[in-house]
Length: 187
Image 1 (cartoon, helix red, strand yellow):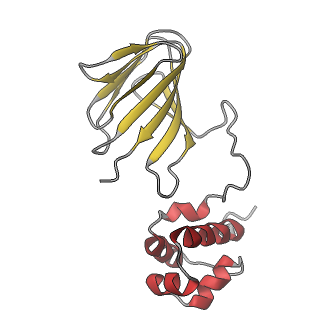
Image 2: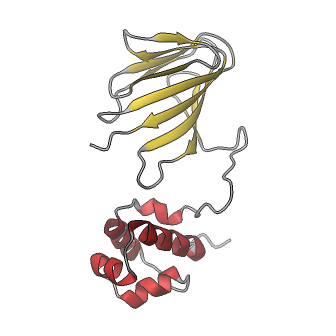
């Protein structure tokens, strides 16, 4: 596979989807992006060869992140099998976050699967202002919440708390797993 070439079919579908989502014509998007309408038409048809600058200008014109153009448009159910998602480990403790779904256009939330090793503690810094964390315990037990205001949760318990203040996750049992929805403020 030649990694130096852009995935034109993915980019074409994503640009078209974002333009249609915004309810804009080819002419309007081309004007806002400062590119020729024919260039945008070719790009959406999968025959163009977009530069970084073109895609960046389209991202600004459509108010979407640059990376959105490289995400395949979901046409079928999106499945991430256990252990297969993109995971990030904590440097502090046995804490792993796996991104299950990034925030789609028009929404401001991400969904994670969190696993915490027995007796592990994760001290989290404040996130962006207005962030709210929603937790559902799937297995094990956890103490979580803002520092000084933690709650203990067992399987199938739900809690939400401000994510824009320092907060903690502490495993109270082996094999602790949580579903975390990170809600971001639109401020």
